[in-house]
Image (cartoon, rainbow, N blue to C red; front, side, top):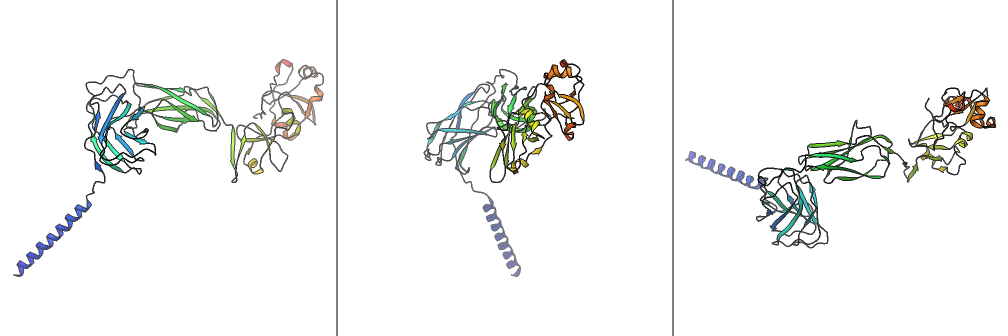
Length: 426
């Protein structure tokens, strides 16, 4: 009797355990949170993939499509959508707009003031215009049609049969190619200006990514990716770049590089302004400007390398400029944020000497000093009053001027004055 009771108790315990496990398994199986779309179709059933084709999606929505929701068409995974010129439907209220994501997902949205689409409504004229894809033979697979709410949650979903391509595929009109057309070298851009990067393709190149190099192509950084067209409006970085290049790279639907091209030669970017954030406000200081602080009278030339070059004396300043009318006064903190460059020397065409030596030197176009061999050469170059043009330079600045060859004739000298001060490199 005791054995029977023990066996019964064990059987009941096992039944309880099985019941608990069964309940746990049932609880662990997620319940689908969306309605199923069972009658979705995509037409035509066969297409020539080398030709842009209008696809029509039809389905009856089992849920309301909210005005701020989305209809998503997920193409078969072999697709690499290149270009869709528009999406239309008279069954869905409002102007439709579309956005391709990850090469296969087409997200369709409407203006926020559009009316919702009632559940049970038949959508039979949702037209996706000019769909193109790289050549794919055989059965492509099914489409997935989804209705999403404003949060991106799926309200309804269903499959629609795909197309068969094998009998209608024609080869591309031209071999696969990608050519960067601009900028292609030789251009000079101004920092913060906008220019167009453009390229041409043949043979069905899907998406493009753009890269910029500031060192002649030794390394590149990403500018933009997943571009479906053949041009991009690029805001030029506000930096000095003597050796700039652009690279365009085509990627397939899986993100793999398939074609690339580079600028044929280097272009240049000229850094035009400095923007200094002092905490309270931003101060914009253009390059190639005369500047000074609020506390001191020293005037500097603010060059394109973002450095301030000092005029050691008024004589040196007046060799370049007629007056101080164009000097821009900026806060001392902003002035101090700019690095100091070298001292500015006398402008080309000037005559200089030091008090301890009677020799007179002429400054050439590169800022070098040349000893004038005789008064006859000095007169032929600077006129009979040449001696009145001679400036005594402080001995501490004398070696700012590299020494060139002695001038024994006027034909051996050139003193073209540049539009901004130059400081020669020793």
